[in-house]
Amino acid sequence: MRLTFAVLLLSLTAFAQHPEPKNLKILPADENLIPTMRSYTAALGVKCDFCHVQGDFASDEKHHKEIARHMINLAKDINGKFPDGKTHVTCYTCHRGSTEPATAPEAAK
Image (cartoon, rainbow, N blue to C red; front, top):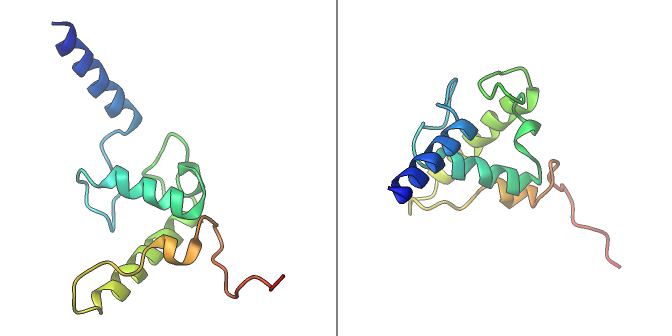
């Protein structure tokens, strides 16, 4: 009984933190959505509120959200051109933990 209650409590907590997705225009509402979002935050070195309005993840108010959608499509387009069907390009490929990707190598020391 305690185990059932604990599982139920954890499920409700997880749902409260990540309510039913709304306003998805690019990504599917499946079990990969939250891990995918976490990979974006790691790749850019940001938190969710960089692209999302706190408390209203469906809002398109923040311009970074539209930029992210554009970049997701860009990565999908690039990856779609490889005949092996594998992912070759991700957000991390360019961003490397920064919101602005480097356009030149660091100066030699």
